[in-house]
Image (cartoon, rainbow, N blue to C red; front, side, top):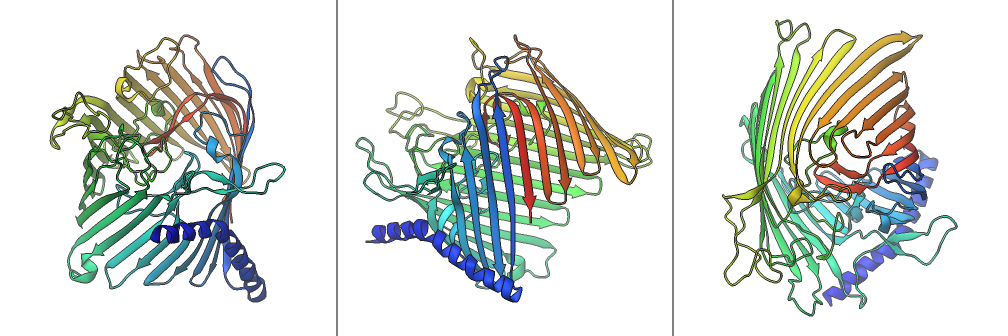
Length: 584
């Protein structure tokens, strides 16, 4: 009875929510124009990309790709109504976005929000703690939208206590609707039902955050916060061979204390066994521990962190792959790079098992000192390394990760045999005068692609450990005004040296800005590979407030595109790209 009720509720949410939103928007419009009451906000992004064949870089011809979304948010006192129209047309194979082909309303919600209560019906995004057991978010660049479609309640029963309860189903790309348009197929978000209409992928959770300073320690100099979460997912077991748990729960506890310039954060999670395609269907419990400590004062800062992750892949669908159906998020412990050549060999978070640490140091050599100069010199140092976890064969098993078994035994305090990744970053930033600033960086890294197997290979290549040294020099120049318009120039020279994989790279960039206009030219030259390809591009654009339009022509290398330890494959391409973003 309960299953049928929940199933009917979410079917109602999918089929009726759009009509409810439209009615409320129409009602709200009369309020806006009749009484000048309430407001509408929004933002939009549109992309158009052409593809032409270029065998020198492995780029294939493909029909022009169009994508975009528009968010609309209406606020009227304590009522918030939101919708997002989203579309993808002629998705390029190999991008991970193929299942999003189509157009429709991907996100819609109604929210009531006051000081002590917050109720949302529809699609929503949220995060418990650092996301170890629950985080949903939207990132169109990575093709991620794991929003929950259901109900969420946030309350503040007393000062210092914040409680969130939610239940719903994750978005599952698109599901066909009955009507079609001429250009796009009109679709609506799909949710998890099998051929027999069984109910899959229900996610429920509760989270509590407590500020002890608001409750009993109002006069303390220290700030103490605690939190606890519980998340469960329900998925029907129809497997003829294995007995899968239909309800998988995960618990998370957090503690944070800070005083003056020092803070310590501890985040621990435990998850019951969850056989899935990620862990080869083993019945191993999962756990994760993240510890961070920070200290800072004027001109100096240090941050050190350690983490251990074991079998913490958590999806609403056990056969999900890539970025689909993720319920949680594993915080990366490596530096998030922005320079082009520094992004070639990224580290991808390993939810099945990783153990690592990260150290960050920041120091400013004082102004008007012999070394610091007139404006001072900023130095930053980052070190990170990641190992796999200890794994031994359980009794009566033939090997590690044997399907349908415990999988392995592991000591929580023992580092695994294989180093997966290590990186050293040194950056120096110095302002020479009012018009010139120089940034320099050196990166030394080891990426164990022999185990990670994340890199694209050439013919007859095998995955191997990759050792690389990267040198970067960036110059920022403030140029004289042209009339009343400010102008500036940014130049970059980068070099990556390695004896493995694709060999050496060189990169150069020149960008010129004149008031709200910009133009840039760059070339990435892989002179260490047999074909020695150039990846040149030229871009131009215009910015005004929250509006931006840009046009790019050039080549894109095949490889990984990563944000925050989450990556997707990007195919090689050669063509034009037009992008428009706007907020209102």
